[in-house]
Length: 354
Image (cartoon, rainbow, N blue to C red; front, side, top):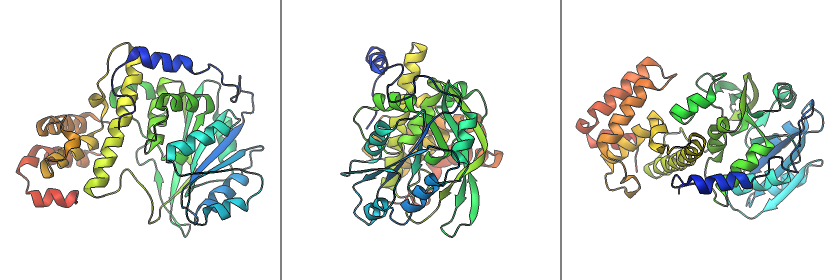
């Protein structure tokens, strides 16, 4: 499941050297007015994809390229997409999110790429605001997203923790991640995305946006816009890394996170010329979930490389030092991890049911 399993610095270095310094399809040098492509990847979201497309076509920034990649939808998505003029439409067999993103990025001819989920949408001035903030050495612009209901009500804002406005590399080096919006709240350098996809290779990974975002500080500068430039739509079919879910879903999500951390650790190893253990950059909630599973379902084979004691001790350490966690939440999780071996199995299994 891992993207890159070991600290193979020589092989990783060769991969990075194979990526052209200036891809022909990306601008050789950013102009004062950078070009922008919005890549919408869609799978069976007929109820939402039209709104996403219209939000791109309504941008006040001129010349925004809209690329829609439908990943083998079986609903009416393709009929809806086909009704729009002025967009690039790509219909492919189902191959997963990463394959759809890869194909969209290959077709982009721009300096900046926004990966817009087909159930989200951008506000009219989003691209103009991103372009104003863009510089030649930028690899990522982060911005907030309103959390919206299908009826248009705004019920919150992402990210849940404040952005950090500088020092993302140091932060990422220590923790492996930093506060970030979901996929649609990020605008990437075209060149950087192509480098990141090159490192992934032909694999399809779930939640690839996490890998793109948290690897970005290793490749260039990050800009932050502290206002909402779009909306993250909350509905019954959302796929979320933070939702309360069954054992199979939580297990799969942790494995995805471990995959991403392995890949980021390998990039850090290359940059620092020493091997970085991916376990050192797992977040506290990863350790908490691993500890829960090891206590409630000790026969789950995926976590044999972890012990119950290790997961609890590392989790406690992370909850003590990990930034931006409210004090009450720190204390609650530290106490849970301390007394987990004494807690009734029925209670733990209620947190992560089969």
